[in-house]
Length: 427
Image (cartoon, rainbow, N blue to C red; front, side, top):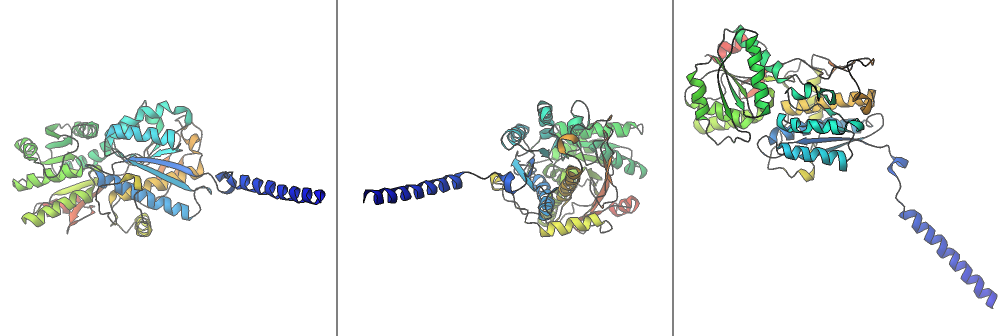
């Protein structure tokens, strides 16, 4: 009897022991590396709220559309892309905090498409601090010079043409039309000064100088008055006004200039977020019955998404049509209606496309070590937009081409013939 009870107790204890081991085994987390490849973590800081939220949101949506496409195709060399983004509201301090969070907490493999000159400029010294981790900033959405020059140029890969190149291209076209007197409206910070310096240097090459300048503070709202800036520039009687501005400020200046009957040609650089500026002007036209979209031209760093001669444009539109492109919940943006297509989302997509190709061919930490003395073969990447991207062997800017657009029938369209544009603008 005792032997039988002992046997039953032993069997029961054995089952409990096995059951306990099973529970313990199931409680142990399985490493992602045992079942899934480690993702490539890409981190962005951009203005998802505040005065240029449309630009930040659209850049993010374009990049997300391409990264979603990459993940549907199996990732980068089998590794999925995790795309993290945080809102900085175009505030340099918040951008720096976001960069530290991405590097320390999220342990990203690369910083990507930070938006804006003052924000990027604040983050640049951080790249030097994290030099031992081989972290680079890929394709910031700014054409300023600090990330293209020492001491930080070696930590940044740029895709877009610089503001200096955009302004130089605008100056050359206007001079060819006989314009010689250039004034400038610019944001009173590193973004605006970068454009101001570009205009000064471009005019110097033609033995010309800036006839007048006016500034405004970052964060300018469309509802505010730009009459003082209009008066300052108009008194100098310029042939052209170059605008280095955000979309709300640029639209306010155009509105007030046209309301005063001043029909001077006004040219904006790519950072203006063309569609958002145009939306404000068209709404003003509906309110007043006046025309605000004549004699406008914008330089761009991507071709028009209306230019169907490029297969890259067709690919962009196709991918944007497929993408949900919803913002991460932590961004909690202010109300915003996404655009089906935009220059900003096109730029974001091209940034993601080139990043993907680079990561497929060269490990990211090795890319960070590329210098002018490197012996690696330069990378040529065809984006289907007319000019291939050339990166590597010390070359940190992939494209130099500048495109142009103008408003026709209530939308921005490609501008190829400036002579025709000039005649139409003076009608």
